[in-house]
Image 1 (cartoon, helix red, strand yellow):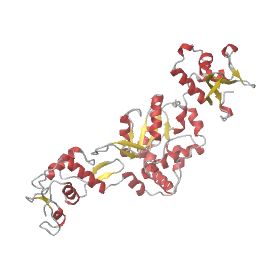
Image 2 (cartoon, rainbow, N blue to C red):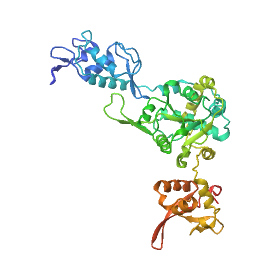
Image 3 (cartoon, helix red, strand yellow):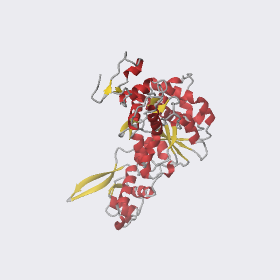
Image 4 (cartoon, rainbow, N blue to C red):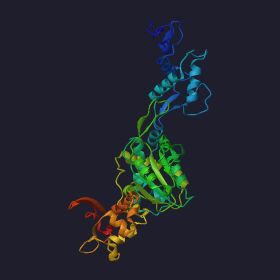
Length: 433
């Protein structure tokens, strides 16, 4: 039966038995270079069947066994392999198909998607928990941490169960990051790599402010962000944005356009410093743990059981979002306070001489009742009016918000002014009075 494109359909029962009878051919009897034919060959030819699969975790096509050509990229299917496959299909010894490499790549991806797999899910389902609890004492047992009690227990649960959730339910909410604090050479990187496995671990070599940072996330379960103390405020803000994102947009291999893919990785921060948080508004996302002598060998021995326990708890419906009560105190201790904070705090309590309070209203019980940014810059910090730029105003505003003051816009007479007033709902022990 002839078609408009000049090919001739071959049906089962024709000259070619089995699957080859389903190949469409030209009028000369040659195998036509159609997508249907290439897909049929990839799925049924003994030398190609079972080779191609889609790694859902890395969003890439892989070769499950050696192809009939010499490949220099074991595992991942590369564009060079696409050219080799095109050449193989066009050989006199095989099918003499005059196909374009782009059509062959399209056929490979189509077939691979029919045989997709997820290596991390397969791993988690394969390990069996022996019933011995290890997860909640993970930091003291393996990381040499002195952190104990509810804080360390909950951070361990948030971290491990959250990592399991990310691969079992891609894109689920995991907006916190474990931060390992310890001396250089303590083994923070080695233990993170051992816990997630070298294949599923990556150290982010680029700043989170760079678009190249996100390339490290694909096919990686645990991504380490090192040297957090060296980050600028802008970079820390980018880390916060990365933590809150639930999907990543990129163009997959052989894809024609960028698509959104649900996030499957979690982040681990490492630092040698004790003070690295510059922006108080996002500090809640960071869960610090001080480490001591890290036992990397013990992690290697118990790694499967730690993940098996985390997977068991996840399957039982355990939560991984509830922050420990002590988290705020731990985060506060890591905050790198602005040098302007102390003079502002003392000025607000009324500790300066009278000449520093021109026209400022006080509370009956003492302390400033309300003030303006101009008064704060001029009287509390002694900065000339000509130097009251936007940078200085924003710096003061951030400190005031941290001190639990809020800015209100009011009408007084014919003027509209912005006043800072103490937040009445703020914790009494945190207000500078």
